[in-house]
Image (cartoon, helix red, strand yellow):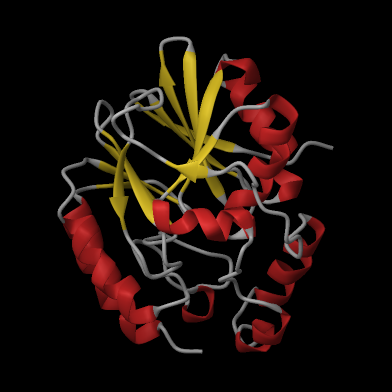
Length: 251
């Protein structure tokens, strides 16, 4: 049975929300850019979302990866292999995408989350979606904005969640895709609205906090996060609200 998807459109950008993660489709005429791809188990959901906005997978000219955690890379790894489109990410994230190293919460850190409401259900669900998979994208390479993908995404370096985490501005749609540098909700968070993802998920807390300044400097109208709902308003306001959640960043 198909899992429910929610699709929110803002001009030529689409935020697709599955049960535990989001991805983004950017439309440029008949061509598409895919940003992130959910867990390995979301690959069929990504395909379905492409069809639901009136396209087919052959329209995908390439994919961008905000960061190489399994809930963003997993579906891309499946689909890039299946359809042969290129995958790009921040220069400092390429080695992570190749799995030369792994900056990701492992089983030993799971107890840091179990006191949070919803955590047991979340763990069960993500295991079913392939959350323990360690497959990378061998062909991932740095994104060059001088040779842009459809929609002309502009990279915004936001290290902290991972060393090479990158947000992407879609200038024609005035949408900022924030990945996990700034989210608006999560299954294990009690907060609703712009926030920092809970502490155990991020590699470098202080760098993640500092990267909110880079988000605040972006001129956009809507934020499409990696988790949670779309948020209308300036990135500067969203960054301020997210910074205020720092006190909730406890194990």
